[in-house]
Image 1 (tube, rainbow, N blue to C red):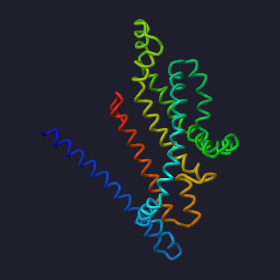
Image 2: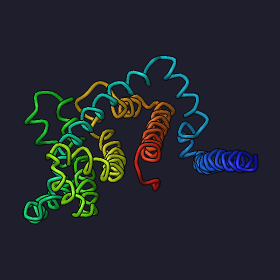
Image 3: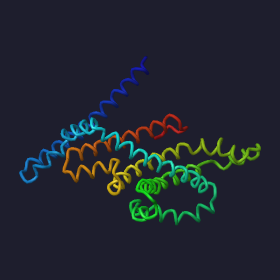
Image 4: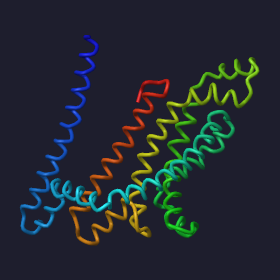
Length: 263
């Protein structure tokens, strides 16, 4: 009984803090825009306020603009993340298992990692036939590094004696991967994916500013060109909300399915 009451209290406090934090953010936003818009020369900035933005969200949702943009951006994000995971996890395992490969690949990987993903955009546009493929490439090149290095770091923490015991018991390479490597690095891989989604989400929106006619970035650019600043702020709200949901979903998956309970 006491445990249940404690859980309810903790949950209630968490919800209160969640909504209180949002209320403080919106209050600061409202006060800032109200102060700026109070001056005649910047009165136009009133459309950047929270109330016009919330009204813009309702309007754009009713028109189907938000749903269409989420679908287009979600497809690009999903494909880019799938490529990043498919490439990053195996290479990360190889880095964690092979000291020679890790030492050979460290310097070129670090150099490539430090290049801004958007720097590849002119090359991607030339190489790929369409903008969708170019954007997916940019997302993949941005997201692959957190996945790769987190996987390698997780595998480096595995006790080498586990592999010796597995070989002594006659385990085949596939058994070693499925019964030792995957469970041991699951937390680190999911943490890397969480970080990768954050990076990819930041890259996705500016990548959609040019060349495409759909997506969240395109919706922001279209609102800017048509001087619909309430719609522009509405799309920024939507982007922030979706990003928060994606990150929270990763946290819940880590807590529920990974052996480590740290997030």
